[in-house]
Amino acid sequence: MTSPVVIYDANVLYPSTLRDVLIRLGLADIVTPRWTETILDETFRNLRANRPDLDPSVLGRTRRLMGVAIPDASITGYEYLIDDLDLPDPDDRHVLAAALHIRAETIVTKNLRDFPRRVLDAHNARAVHPDAFLQDVHDEHPGSLPTIIRDIAVTWRSGTDVDVLASLAVEAPATSKTLSEGQ
Image (cartoon, rainbow, N blue to C red; front, side):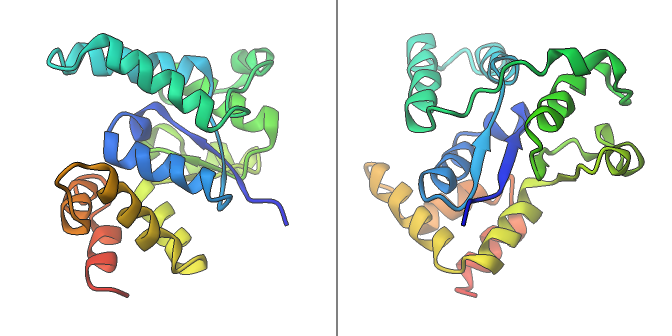
């Protein structure tokens, strides 16, 4: 059985803990994560602009390691679809175009208003908030997220599962609460 193909929008790759969880879902073959170079450009451009305290070489390393971790993640050849798409924010058309090009099942994004259901339905596409996405993953694969959270905590020098969940709660409060309660 193949794992569902999902497009990660820049705004879900921006927060480090959420990004780590989402990439590890791919490493565990729970989903097949995909993105474009344009999505990564936006992610890391915003990180450099908003977080001047982060070393640019570390950000570059993070981007390279994402490609190493998920070597087939980068989508190409979708650009021909962009001009025919109509979204509230024209700058998001490339995300939908990439999703349509590879027939992704889901776009994971925090900007649901920029991907109206009426537009997505016409293309048999759907957009899901990362919290709802992670809740669905937890429902379908109950042991996966606790294992991922534990693995992330191990990589943090002095971190615990509680610390990881507290960081994840910023972007995925319901999921963090569910996992904290052990459900």
